[in-house]
Image (cartoon, rainbow, N blue to C red; front, side, top):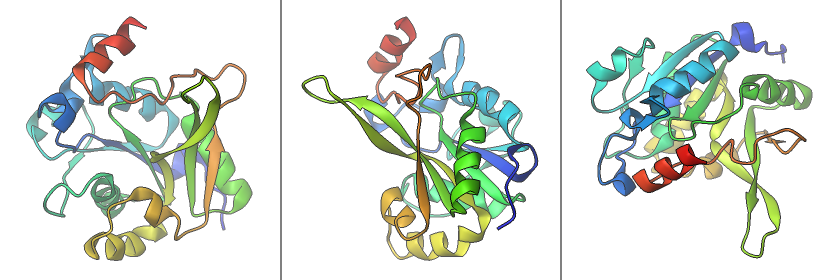
Length: 210
């Protein structure tokens, strides 16, 4: 396949379309972290890495439009999860690849796109997925896949459409159907909490203090 260049070939998608159940129904992307909404922070970290950006949201869309990226909403009912965001992102993607990031991991790396692209090109893969260190009970560290941090080829749209409309909901179940390379982010100097995602206001406040 033709090698991908993140500066010209990738559309970034910030996922902010969830229901925020564990935040008491709050719109997670609009909660503040270090003085700015989570979704805006994600856009600002992602935009310099790639060609263009989109934002996936299912409510408060007028507010999200002020963040400067086109807002797209799920076309699948009942909040089926991040794959619905992937699907609408691919529908609006005009570049060879789509890079998805959640709005609730405010410290994801500034070299995310480059490292995923390098792995995608090296393995001639369909998908490159982050694998990040996670401390287990007992203190040992393992690398764990982070399925919502994905670089996808836009040729996967039909496959994903069939999977979602067939009732599929798990990102890992769909990516397992394709050539997927996992990309470890455990080099010296990589922040250990770069992919920590916040699910509650308490976790958000704790991460900010940290």
